Length: 459
Image (cartoon, rainbow, N blue to C red; front, top):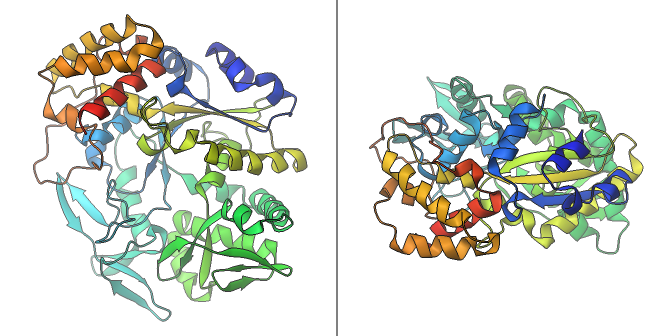
């Protein structure tokens, strides 16, 4: 099955399917933003392949205006999830927005946004004896935060989750669910990875590729120091007596997402410092536990290797050739391969992974139904780009945009950095994304080049 999907997309060679099938390669990343695969070919495959539904990893927070197609740059979520090209897989290890940097200023999880109006929530965290009201001086780790609902402290995760799952036509899933469901295997794998890292010459660096942050029970989270200490491990000064104790502690923040009320009922008994898994390990686990096949459980039975299709957003996928996104960097690929290799070697149930990154920002080229002129102008731009060699797509789009007038401010605003869910108090009319003529005939490489050109001219 995995081999056939890559073959149909023309990606067998770039993925190295022979090496994956022979288990000679454990992890192979493919960024479709650099490949000449038609958007229509990929979308047809997704809708035709039974059980396949690539995740679109979004954050905990305000999705109401996203679903209504009036969230600016976040409208690519509307195009992917609303049209059934993927589903929203919610990554909850984010931080509330604050007066200082580091919080999630895109999805605004520390607030409720309704009809374009933002209402900041009161935030409470554990101070060692009780849940105390916090100010906005520093971002707080969302899974460890509560808020006031009708006079009752309620997990922040629950507040947003109940609003999200009530949105018609969207299939929201918690990223943490598959990890908690596979907890015994996850703990065993973490034990093996911790032990291997501890035995290397630079254990601190290798351990940081597995556990990148630590969170205290008061919700303060940051980069951590994790080092071996005899048979145990020191995490920001707190000692875990064994690899298994550390691995089991990894489950606690995950359960704060899947079982928040249980978590807060037990918080007084928990270690003062909890480990937070890295994005590097998270990306491997997305594929390993089959988040691209959400109706199945456990490790997917796909043949000699797993082909994981994944819709990545602006930070993850970027817009080649202007920005590659963090996923394509060598500094990210090397540790993901280092994580996967011992798992493939030591766990028979673990298969090599081909991680196919689908750049969701290409759907920023689909204007809202309220702007028909944008669709007409973009169709002309697409024709110009399709008429030149793939490597000339970026320069062609730049040249066309330099003289192309009449595009709406709303469309151009999608490509400006730092923009998230609008909360100006002036909501737009609800809309659905419209694919301009020729959109599906663009390759992902061409479409990414056009997005890159838009980013350049709207700086």
